[in-house]
Image 1 (cartoon, rainbow, N blue to C red):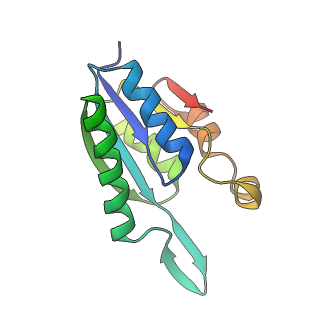
Image 2 (tube, rainbow, N blue to C red):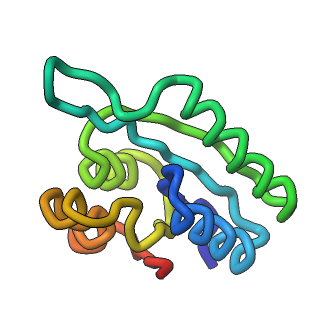
Length: 131
């Protein structure tokens, strides 16, 4: 049984479903909710999520964890989501990753590729993808 599980989160329904799935299936584990601030390029440079958005996202994750009675740590990083998720798993003690199948839809998903697919291929630990 996994003792420490990484759950990458964003503001999608799939992310919430992945958290619920992970918490339900591993009530004795410790969880790490990782949110990656993704850069957006256009006229200049900006981050996709502001600090207030991330605080709300973490508050939501903590509410779900509390409802399930599990321990949750929150971490944020900046960069390309798939790279940051894999890097976190490589550099920190995690036994597995549970993540949603995608947080994007439409053209951005096609153009940027699937984060879940990339993480699954590159992860040093087992990955469960929740659809």
